Image (cartoon, rainbow, N blue to C red):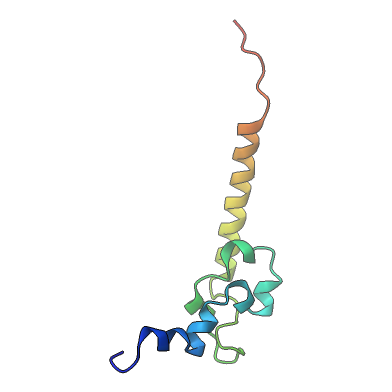
Length: 92
């Protein structure tokens, strides 16, 4: 911290890997239909010493993220359908 600048940190391989976004996800995450929403989860939760690179494994919370993303998606579809449904004429 005292010997290196922010510019030094910005070119460090670990820092660059974190900035790769979708391309930085492992093959399991990239092939998942939910990956554009969850983004693979928190970077630190994708650590696996046997993975190459070590942060390319699915999140340890992958199953929980799937439930959450699916629930939110279903709720949004339902609510949008209700809001955009044609309304009947009001009876007087």
